[in-house]
Length: 198
Image (tube, rainbow, N blue to C red; front, side, top):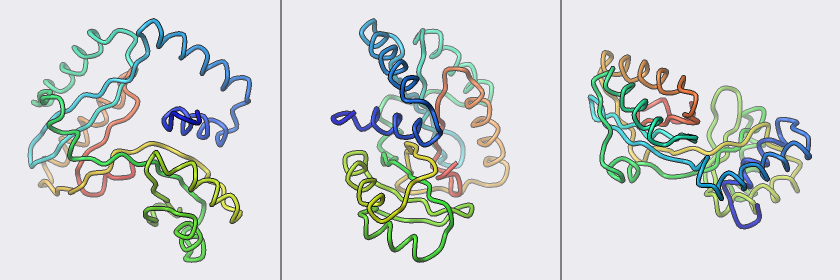
C-alpha cells in the first residue's frame, strides 16, 4: 500500500467503512493471488455518445472477453459503441475524492491548509481532491488537524464538462444506470456537467 496509491486508497476506504483489519488483509491476499493468475485485473472501456458526451467505464472482470462483449451489448442497446483506447481517457483527470462531513468554511480552509488540490461543497459535505501520489501526505496532514474522511474514492473528473440537450442527457443517464448495474462494472464516469461526483 505504501507504493500503490490505488491499493492504499481501497484499504483506507474499507477502514473508513468499518471493515475489520483481518478482512482487509484477506481480501488483499486473495486479490494478489488472483492478479498472479491474471484474473481480477482492472479494465477500462471508453465510449462516446450524443452531444459530445463521453463515458469512462471501469470494470474488474473475471473473464475479460465476456465482460467486454456484455459492455458492448449494453452500449449497442442505447446506440453507442466502444471508442478506441485512449480516445476518451485523456478527457479525464484521475483524482482521489475524500468526503468530509459538513460544508462549512472552517473545514474547507483546514483541508486547503492540509494540501487539498481543491475543495468543493457537495450534498452537505466538503469534498477534498488530491492526486493519487499526494493523497497519503494530504490525509496525514488532515488527520493532524482533526479531520477524518467519512469516505474515500477514486474519481475520473472531466477536464471540460459538456451540457447535452435534455433528450441526450436522459439517454446518457439511462445508459450510465444500465452500465452501473453490470456485476463487473465498478465505476462509470461521464463528462456531463453535474455528474462529476456521482
